[in-house]
Image 1: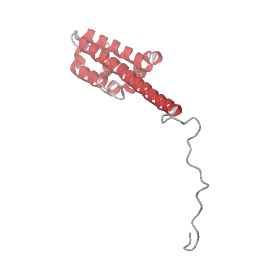
Image 2: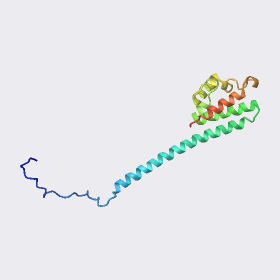
Image 3: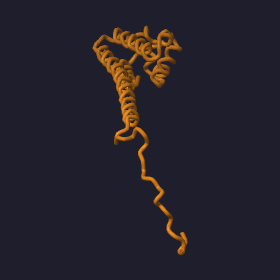
Image 4: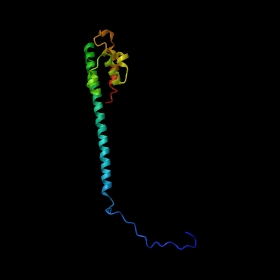
Length: 155
């Protein structure tokens, strides 16, 4: 606008109009989108809770069974621990992994628990020394190692 120009004529302009079907303040499409988003958020939260509970229950059951095995004599204790390890690997990694034997079993256990406890530590008792004389194995080292590994289960 210049200083000498007449002001524009605004009499031909129309007032603002809402889109058709938008007579109310709340539009059904917006409400449906909000409800759908909220429902999906609830579903994702429920799935996460169920997965966490399943993993916690596997961990809890394994630790409970390990605690029960501590009350046994050394040889039955080791057998109960070996059975527990087989069941855990079957649950976490599948039937094929649970069938491994010898060095492959040690590798499977170490991969399952992300450790070297079964190849280089006291856990060798479950891979090569299950039938070794009980005096050559430290049951306390095995118990503490298994407790540490089982408490880290996240499945």
